[in-house]
Length: 194
Image 1 (cartoon, rainbow, N blue to C red):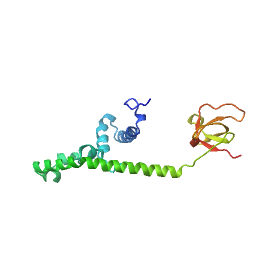
Image 2 (image 1 turned 30 degrees about the vertical axis):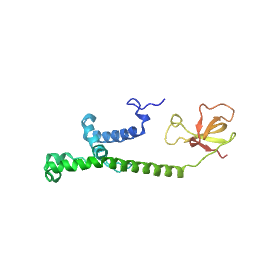
Image 3 (image 1 turned 120 degrees about the horizontal axis):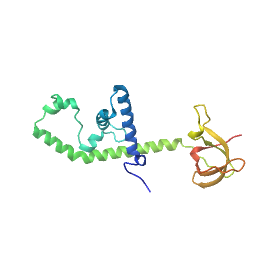
Image 4 (image 1 turned 45 degrees about the vertical axis):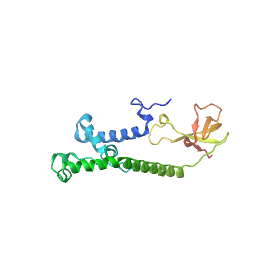
């Protein structure tokens, strides 16, 4: 079962990423200005939608509407962007923008795929594959509940590998034979050297 809804934003990585950026900006603005988040939300969303995003190399506004957003000052004060064109010229330019929107979105998709491939390649070059066999002594990553402060050990153990469950998944037991609950991924285990 998968959850992709308003109640479960953590299941949608893209929405979760956007929410983190928006929340971070809201915190900064509310702390600096002393206003409520409700007053700051439209400004934060405007800046988020009109800022170039690295994966697509474009703004969300441009990807939706096919044109760059006008900043509020351009609307309030006469600017070249508004006064430099007749209504017919503006409509003609808008039609061209809308004709090119599919190409703009395709270019953004290609940029996004390329960014994902670069991230995957970078991650895979840094991953150290760990293969453990039954009987190996290992340390497991300490859980947050086990870490009391910054000086607490990040790894606990040693434990003995009891069973290889799947690719990079292991069951552990204590040295005196007690079972450790749940399986552990190799990314959370290190060899123990005595």
